[in-house]
Length: 417
Image (tube, rainbow, N blue to C red):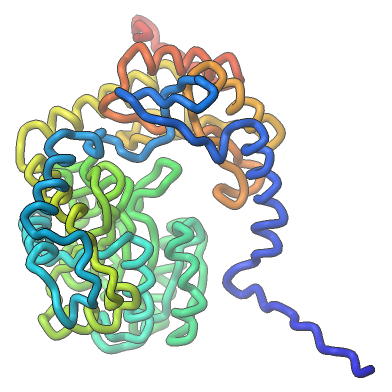
């Protein structure tokens, strides 16, 4: 019998053997310890499992708690009543009801840019990055495409697709020297990274803007974690800080986090109507028969209205106060920044047990481990929200110290709050 040839993977852009082989055991341990696969009912900010255990969620990305805001809920219901359909299932490039255009116009006014909505930031990324790779978004030149080593998996997963159109490499985290060297060598360079990442950090947008001005660098940011929580009218970190807001800067942000609704916004400056049609027609899932449904549109319109009021600033200030309180009690590498995420370091061997003890005490913080973070850098990810009370934060921090977190050290003459 003739032997059959086994296929040998190249692992140029991903390695499932490594990801699953190492990461899945951590997930299994999390589930066995009651830290994954949790099913619970939410009532007034408290989650309750079928067994009766109650806990406060400190691992939720709804940083301003707008997902439960009465106006947002009513906005979803009102849109359904007004348009009389949940999901008119046909590609928007062929036929669409006015609902989505109304939301895009509202978000466009909020950002001061053109906005295209999609089902999610991942769908937007899957549609846009290959068009950047082929030069159809940009100046027509295929770019040398650099993915940041820590780019979210929703971006990193598109490397093989982009590599079918152009040369793709992975750089060290925000390696400005590497990026500039590439800009000197290639006619066009595109850099793909998080504007605000899921482990508590911001991109060096001003330094990248210098490279944009000097070399025409195109930067693709996913700024999902800072939308609404950061900046005037909640425009996010990138659009609050980058001096380059034109066709060289593309920002994608989910509406599911601090914005409190559903879907995603692609924020574009300086793109012609013809290029917008290319995105609509050839942008992967953006061109499929799955536009944002009417309830999500209505909720988005209501949230956008809140972003124009003083209430947004009030919520942002509450969030900032909660971040400051946490920092006064627990020390992390993120201490002192205004990001709503803190990573409490733990070893690979202790992180699951620490998480189990925290949830048993009535608080949920998600253990993160490889491949979410690099091997040997595990921790408990804590997410602050505007709606958390001071007492809840103090009690959580007390539990975190009990499981090994480093307490903050008050400066001389400074009282720990």
